[in-house]
Image (cartoon, rainbow, N blue to C red; front, top):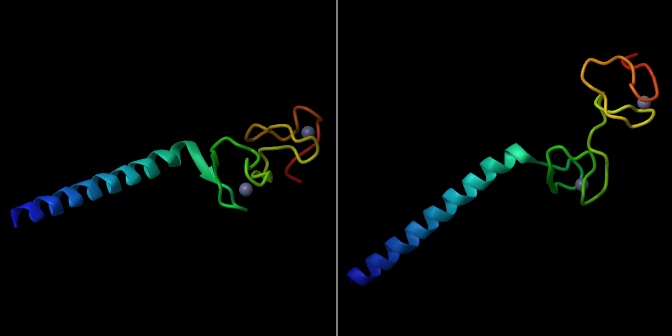
Length: 87
Ligand SMILES: [Zn+2]
Ligand SMILES: [Zn+2]
């Protein structure tokens, strides 16, 4: 009978270790990855385009609508093409 108890405990231990590992992975993944708003694929946090569906992920002021250059926060003009933002 005690043999089954040990097996049960080992299974429970393995299960809890696995759960803890999943939680840890989810926690750490939040820092370096994000999910595509279109297809839900996990992609790099700094990625501009989804590696899976290829769609552009950032449409706000971070990127120039005219030339696609990266724009620093608070900048009123595109440093590449000179187009004015925030109209
Ligand atoms: Zn995608
Ligand atoms: Zn531009």
